[in-house]
Each structure stands twice: as structure tokens, then as C-alpha cells.
Length: 424
Ligand code: GLC
Image (cartoon, rainbow, N blue to C red; front, top):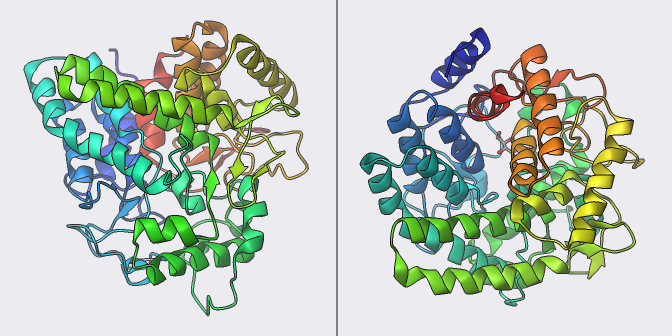
């Protein structure tokens, strides 16, 4: 690969954010190791330092709890000024201090991609050593987040979706009692303009849910039964189906025959569950609140991940392509995280409108895998344009392209190196 100046900048950002075996998303705003950030970061490292790519995943997996969960934040080293830190989470159930919830399970898909990109003995051994741990991580999602065994994975906190501030969660906040949350000091708004961050009312809900987890001593079964927030997110479900399919590929590549039929039956269950997310009125896959049985009437960009998951009928996929077309007529930069026609669309506030490189990577990859090359190219090209013109921001306005949130972001750099820089 020919290395450009932008490639060099991306490599520099990842190197600067490297804290020795793990990478922070960006200095200051996010000073620890985050689950899906690290997985995407490994894709970036793989382009210039393959051993370091595997190390990023290995380090993350060392935080795995006995029950299989890989936490969303690993508090690997002291970092002043982050809220809510380990003392608030009180979730020290794993080998390393961590939060008590997880994040979208992209790890298996990343391992699969690393192995396809470089299938030498070194990578094969690394993948083989990780395989069973990732399998138990997947089993944890079924056991802890689908106790009803319906094939629909639920999240227990907006942060578990990785798309923390989506308007979809607003409706589910109604049942959350925030009266006992108490006083607290946020830190995010010291680093980033508060117009881009969640409101105080939403932050109160986030904390009430953390406090509920603490009151359950982070027991997954108790949380599943009692948590006021029990919501099926299209993103997590689509990402998980893809991850299970990639785990199956790994099982075949690594000759882990004993796991094959179990993974196959988990995939069948999940594919069936996913059908319930289809909202025929909106002609899109929408959030389903399992406490109220209410289907959201908002559309977010995860609906386009049906391609990434490899699900949906011909007609359903066609409807998503038409929707992409409709959104492209409304915004200048694809793909906005939230429906740009919805009154709740917000150009700058995070996850309520702006574009994320990593989400575009998954949407674009899915479209390409399923033969929708033209759309895949649009998504890849738009991502490349945003990054090359605005730099490695956390996310970008879909309207004027402005880079927002934190700067010098690891996953934006990684996605540039592994995918966006190959745009035609
Ligand atoms: C924000 C994002 C989340 C990400 C984290 C670190 O909380 O919503 O998805 O993992 O930042 O980048």
C-alpha cells in the first residue's frame, strides 16, 4: 500500500493514543480502554503493525469476566477527571477494574478480518487462542441479554448500544426513576461543547441505570428481570448476527469442529428474532422496547446494517436502498446516524444526526458483501471525503461536514487506514 500524508497522520494518532498494549479512543475525553473502539483500532494497526493489532484485542480480552462478558470500559490505569469512573460503577467482578455492561460485539468480525487479511501461522495461532474466549462472550449475550431465549438481544443501558444518545432511547427513559441520582460532576462537557453532548436529563438516566446495576451487584439475571431499560437495538442485533457468522467462519478456518453446530443454531435463533425488529409501517428495522412492547417510529442508521448481518428479504433490502437514496437527498454527507427527516434530528449532538466513520465502515462493508457495490462506494467515498477534509474527528455533521466531538480519534484513524483510504 502506498502511504500518503493522511495515512501518516492516522498512524501518528494511533501511536500517540497507544498507552502500551492498549489504545485510548482520544486523550482527555476518553482516557481508558473502550471495547468496540479497541476492536476497530486493531483493524488500523493491522495495516502497519500486525502484532500490535493482535495485542490490542488480547489486552481487551484479559478484562473478560468469568461469566463471559467483555466490559465496555476497562479502567486499566488511573486517569484523573473521567466520570463515571470505577468508584461509581462498583463493578469489580472481573480480573481488571471495569464498567458493568458491554458494548456492540464486533470483536469476532475483526478477528475474522485480520485472519482473512493475513492467514500466516502467527495470526492463525493468535486467533486460535482467542476463539473460545470470544465464543463465551457470545454465549454471554444469549444468556444475559436474552433470558427469554427469543433470539432478540436486549441492552440494559444506552451505552451498551455504543450509540449512547440516540433519540430512540428517549421513550424508554420515561420509566426510569432519577430522583435518587444525587449531585454529580460531569467531565465530558469540559472537553467538548455541551451542544454536542447529552443533556443533563439524559445523563441522570444514564446514572440511574448504573446505580440500578450496582444495586443488583451486577448480577446479569437480576438485571434482566428488573432493569427499567430492556430494549432491543437494531445495531447490536445486526452486529451480533454478523459476529456470530464470522465466529462460524473462524470455527471452520481454525477447525474448531465441536463448536460449529452450536453456533449455527444460535445464528438461526438470532435471524428469527431480528424479524421482529421490522416495522412495516416505517418500512425499516426499528428499536423495540421489550418492557412496553413498543416499536419505535424513529429510524436510525442501524437499519442499513441488515446488509452487514446478511438478513432481510429482497423487498426489505430494496426498501433500505430507497431509504438511503431518500436520506442522500436531504444531507450532504452520508450516512447520518439518525433520520434527517425526523424532527428529533440534531446536526451536532452526538448520535442524534452526525456521521460516524465506524458505522459507515459496517454499512459499506455490508452493502459490498451483499452485492450493492454502488451504494457501498458512495458510503466509502463520503467517509474518505469527510476524514480527508476535516481530519480524524470523533464524528462529523451530515449537513456541512464539520468535524465534531473529540479530535485525534483512534477509531477514525483506524477506519481510514483499513477501509476509507481505499475509496475510489
Ligand atoms: C462514546 C461513544 C461510544 C464509544 C466511546 C469511546 O461514548 O458513544 O460508542 O465507544 O465514546 O469512543
